[in-house]
Amino acid sequence: MSRTDVSADTTPFFSDDYEGEGLADNGVGSPKPEEEEDEPASGVSDKRAILTVIVLCYINLLNYMDRFTVAGVLPDIERFFSISDGKSGLLQTVFICSYMFLAPVFGYLGDRYNRKLIMSVGIFFWCLVTLASSFIGKDYFWALLLTRGLVGVGEASYSTIAPTIIADLFVKEKRTNMLSVFYFAIPVGSGLGYIVGSEVNHVAKDWHWALRVTPGLGLLAVILLFFVVQEPKRGAIEARPEHTLQRTSWITDMKALCRNPSFVLSTFGFTAVAFVTGSLALWAPAFLFRAGVFTGVKQPCVKDPCDNSDSLIFGGITVVTGILGVASGVQASKKLRTRTPRADPLVCAAGLLLAAPFLYLSIMFAQASTAATYVFIFLGETFLSMNWAIVADILLYVVIPTRRSTAEAFQIVLSHLLGDAVSPYLIGVVSDSIKQSDSYMWDFRSLQMSLLLCSFVAVGGGAFFLATALFIEKDRQLAENYVPSDDAPIVVPKRGRSTKVTVSSVLI
Image (cartoon, rainbow, N blue to C red):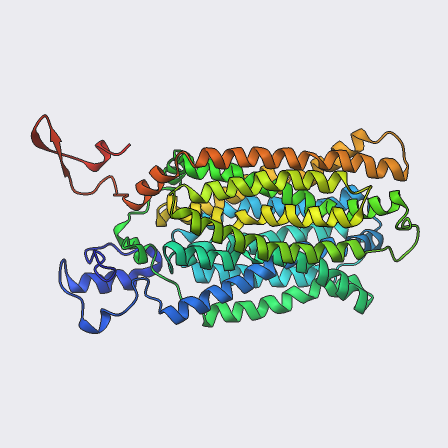
């Protein structure tokens, strides 16, 4: 079947009624007008598709910049509001929880309504509440917690939907390439969050201005999203247009996803990635500073301003390793695909299993050599970053188009719930339980021991990806050849004779 010959006999969906009517006018089996033959199946030109990816990547970069801008100015926030470390940790917890629990809502909406409109409204709301958070007075810390929670609304509306638009614009290796560009924004944006937050604070002499950078850039993103991005037809580029796939209830979608071993196992593997990155994002700069104080390289922070050079260096490392890791992961996957269809989960497993020993060495060498510590962190984060684009690609090709936003949402909930929502707090609790006295030595030693947990979690994540490799080929074929269960009967041989049965009776 050619790309331009996608089922004319279709039923329109809520977000694209005009498309369904246009198809119905042609009639079943009627040829399409000659001028439409060169139109891409997605309904979006190649040039517009590239521009769409650029805009989506830009917005994703802003999302992760905003998350870690607060981390870059956290000491100033603690002094301004006179809060403890426990309360300051709530800033990230509240955001992650809001983002996590709202993701399924937007996943449901993204599979059923206009995705461009949902993202535009969500990002505009995110800009407003982020800007509002920079004007909160020192006696209203609860208001800062509230605005950080509301930021999760905007980010959930984007993160669950944007990858599905890329999936509807490209297929196979080109899709992987575009996803790699999109997911560069995760480590790169995170690193820029540290850098921009600390530097703007340094220049303006006021941490409030650090929170006013991303809202301005976010408003530009809304304009670009509204005028540049075009809503593609769901699944049409795969010769599986959304009109031929019947939407099912949310419960049916979730049951189908839970019966998809490749999706479930890769989600647990990705949860391990989130656990490790969440721990490092919050604790790595503090750990490096404590190591410097313990070894006598740095002076203790007894008066303002504290030495924030470790945050800047760690932010720079995160940016570089993100670019190298995502690019190398995609390239390794491409080369391995020529030998095995299980390439993607195997590369993800290798990334985590290789990251584990380097993260272990970076933690253990911190007291002996600062240079060696940075080298091992660089290598560990590079291997860890190999997973980002590949995990997203796995989800998109083992899940049918009309369930992808729901799948994205489910993966976001689970990976954050068991990953970066709990890991920073867990590392802190373990560190407090190990600490035997209030001294610079035990400040360093207790955090050092608790961070070793990340290496073991990385190994567990690698095991989940190895398990994914056992099912990936079968689940991909099931998704590509999926047929609605209430379709017309098909002919199945039975004891030498042809027997008509429904599709549902032969699907496993």
